[in-house]
Image (cartoon, rainbow, N blue to C red):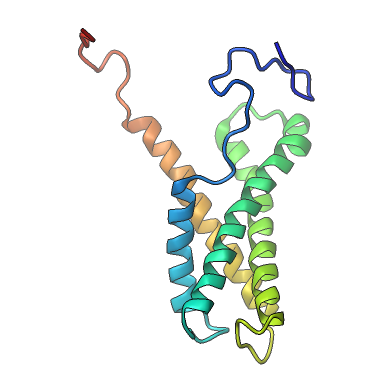
Length: 167
C-alpha cells in the first residue's frame, strides 16, 4: 500500500496511484478549436500563415495546461481551507485560478512569439492578449464543466437499464 504526500492511501484506485494524464485527446481538439477561433478573430494581429496558426495552437495548449496547473494549485491551497460540501461552489471557486492561469499562459506564449519575430506585432497590446486568454479559458472551462454535469444526467442509472446477460 502506498501513500500520497497528504497521507491518503492509493490502494484500490483505478489508476494504481498514478496521476491522470495532463492533457487528453479532447484537450487537443479543444485547443485546435480555440486556436482557429483566436487565429481568425484576434484584433491584435493579422493572420499571416501556418506559423501564426501554430503559435495560437501552442498558446491554446498552454492555456489548458495552465488551467490544469491552477486546479492543482487550488487543490493544494484552497481546498483544505474551504472544505465545500457543494460541488458547484468548488467549481465557482476554481474559476479565478483558471482564468488567471489561462490569461497569463496565453500572454506569455504570444509575447515570446513576438520576441522571436514569429508574430508580427508593432505595438504589444498585453491587455488585449490577456483578455483573449481569459475569455478563451472561461469558454473552455464553462464547456468542460457543463459537459461533465450534462454527462452525469445523460447516463442512465442502474434502475433505468434492463438487465444485461454477458454470456
